[in-house]
Image 1 (cartoon, rainbow, N blue to C red):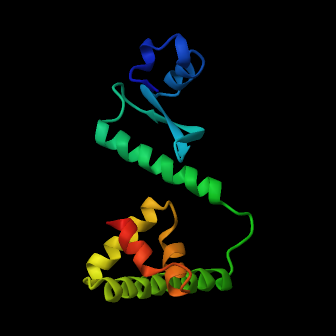
Image 2 (cartoon, helix red, strand yellow; image 1 turned 45 degrees about the vertical axis):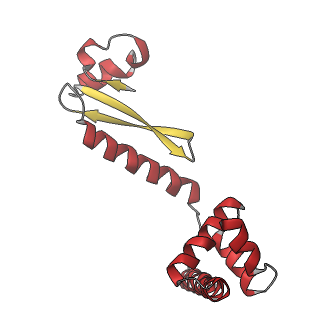
Length: 155
């Protein structure tokens, strides 16, 4: 929602805020939704000194920052992050990456593909089966998912 000229925004959505913002020296305002996965969880108001509001590139940047803020708010925890938590997350990310690399190598060898082609086949299979790439890779490495299933489903 935009009020590009608060002087003329006497009624409507800005009936209460408009005159107060104008009295405080602001000329325009924007209300940006705080969104997480296309669900609005709140809003942030930007008050601009002059009339006319923010230019479109600045408004797009502000919306992107509002979206990041929404994700941070949803993910926030009142407990401080411990060093063990960070190192555990890093180790898990490295292990997941290694598992995906190993699975890609398995697909490359089994299907006589380049590593790049095999990684693509692996990603396509994960998308089509609506599974996380790391779950598919883990299943391949644990031998609960046959490589030929990935190759035939992905092509």
